[in-house]
Length: 312
Image (cartoon, helix red, strand yellow):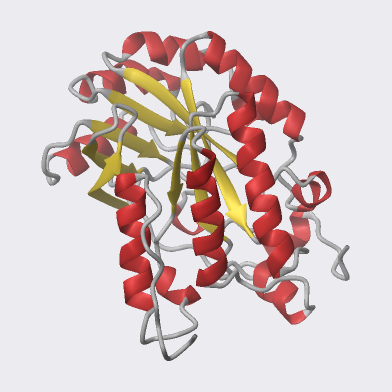
C-alpha cells in the first residue's frame, strides 16, 4: 500500500516549524451559520483554543502548527474563551475546538471545567473534539456542568481498516463504534469527521470510501457527518504526493460525495469549505460550485448542478 515507511518519528521529522501562539489567546475564532439539529439555520461560534499538541501524530494532521509544547496554565483556557466571546457576535451554539482532545488533561486542565462551563452557560449546544482513546469520565462530568447539550466530534477519518491504520490514528473502527454507542447511551450527541480521498486511495476509491464511512458512522449512531477534503501542507503529505501515494480530491468528487451523503437522509451532512479554492479545477465555475455547496450545507438539500461550458 505504501512505498514510504510511515512512523510517528517520520511524520514528525517531515514537519516544518510551529506558528507562534499565546497561551492566553485562542489562535482563531469566528461565527458562522449551520443547519442545526432543530432544522433551523442558526449561528455557531467556533473558538480554536491554543493548547498542548495532541499526543496522536496523525498522518494528515496540520493542527499541530498552532499548539504549545507544554500544558497551558490553569486559567488560560477560560481567558481564551473570554477573549473570543468579547469580540464575537451572539450565537446559539459554540464549538470549543482545540487541535486535539478536549478531555486530554495535558490539553485542557480539568481544573478549568467549571470556569469553562460558566462561560458557555448561555449556549444551547457545546461541541468539543475528542479521540476515542482519550474519552473518560470527565466527559460526563463536563456534561453535567454545562447548561446546554454536549456534543462530541470524533475523527473517524475513514472506515477503510487498512488506510485508517496507515493514518497513524491509533484506533480502529470498533473503537469508534464503542465510544459512539457509549455516548449515545448517555444522551450525548456525536458528529464524525470523514476524509475524502485520504492517502493510498484513487479518486474513485476516495469517493466510495467516504460514502462507506458516512454509512458506517450513521449506522452506529452518529447524528452528523462532516466531509473534509484531504489536504497537503504538513510535510509528510507532500512526501506521499511525490511518492504517488496521495493526490488531493477534485471539487467534483467533493460534490459527488456530499450529494450522496445528503441523499442518505440518515442525519445531517456537511462539507468543509475551508480553503476549498485549493480544489478548484476550473476558475470559471469554482466560486459558483463553492457557493452551491455552502447553500447545500445550510439547506441540507441537493441543489441543481453547476453547468459550466468551460469545463464540460
